[in-house]
Image (tube, rainbow, N blue to C red; front, side):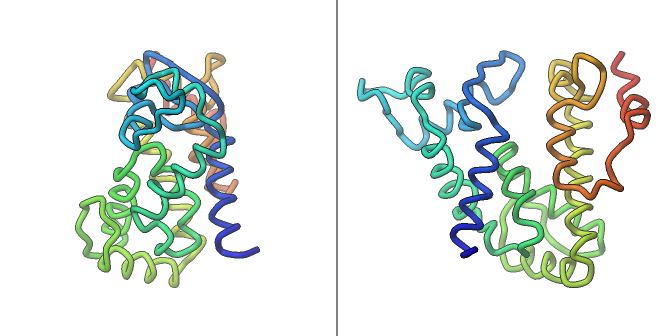
Amino acid sequence: MTEEARVRRMAQEIVAREGGYVDDPDDPGGATNHGVTLGTLQRVGSDLDGDGDVDRADLSRLTESDAAAIFLRDYFHAPRIGALPEVLQPSVFDMYVNAGAGAVRLLQRLLCDMGEAVAVDGVIGPQTLAAARRAADAAPDHIADAYGIARRNYYFALADRRPASRKFARSRAGGKGGWIRRAESFVSPRFHLTEAQFRARVAAWG
């Protein structure tokens, strides 16, 4: 598989995970289609129905191909995720679609915890790249799992702070919600929380 095809597949997989049109009032990102928010569509100026503005009608017209193209341009190439070690790219790219520069700050905080001296500024620059490469060279499996676990903890903390977001982390049946399952899809099975561990973690939510 070529590098271009590998990266395109990552974008297509993100689109598939995001699903179709959703306008959930409890989602801080607002209305989305294939993972693209209305705010993003307005920023890129995609007037898909040609009526002179960019609104929910345009968002509803967005195709999977359109979404993948936006993700590749604005969420992979623009922030330089392709310069990171390959083992980190799928999860950081997926997280960037969810959290923007917060995905990079999460990586930078992880690198700091691993003893690297990097600025937590959300920018993938020479310092962050060098630290990520050292971490990946030393333990490629560890850095990928550690980032996925940090991401899982990020979602838990977000739900701790914002009760309205808990439905994204915990299912109606009380099991793992979409956020947690998504984070763990980038983590080795041996580091997945058991159902008992998960329920204990969220017990305080009531």
